[in-house]
Image (cartoon, one colour):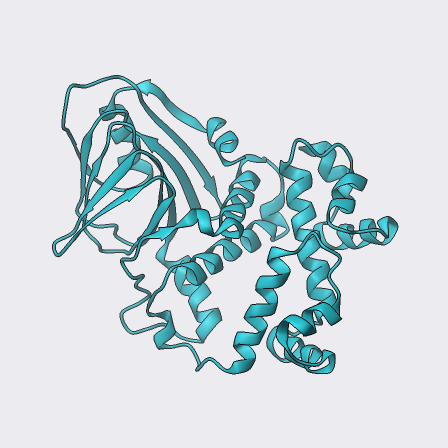
Length: 319
């Protein structure tokens, strides 16, 4: 689905590395390009904007070196989709291959070498967006600001994170009024939260101490995320948590200001909303709802409208 979104946002197709570089300098980040072999006009670039974020897919089609003085006031989340990319830092070198990802911090100098078949996805996130989310998490920022560790992650092991990226930028491809009703910022905030949970940073320096209750909640939420299509019960979740049903309700009330059932319901609504907007294989609302073990269709439609401002059938028709 992500490739479909980006294919509809193509800026350059089968052009020169210099032309792609010009667009990248304007929209992704300042850099200097150096060709490291004979030039072949097969460079490609796609760009997509969404609620303060931007997504780009870059393929130079040539072996090139890209040097950036710094990222100024932005973070870069970069995924190698094909080929390989070498990061050359002052103290170490890293080589990322297909499926691997890295977070880059503001002010960080970048010296990269792209293989001729390298294709990368880059999500550009303003410092302010990261800072605001961190303050919500911890109540304050580290003195140095948020700094992500220079640690490579295999993003293929985080399918829920990939699904989140797809959902965010599918919304960007839809010319709707989502930004007017707050849904776009909700998707943006969800993506940033996923980044903070996936990539280690100094956020932990200012986080309140983790308690056994925090770990229990995270285990239960992870289970819900993995099994969201199932008919989840409170008894099942209490068994996963290893606590009583009463204690589980208390944890959700104190930590999330909701109940387990309400949390599951909202998670299913968000997942079905995403499916109706992006999954072209879905033929009708009933099919989508049943796939997530929703059986009371009338009640589901009413709750869906309360959440998203329209009936699920309207969402399906508008895709």
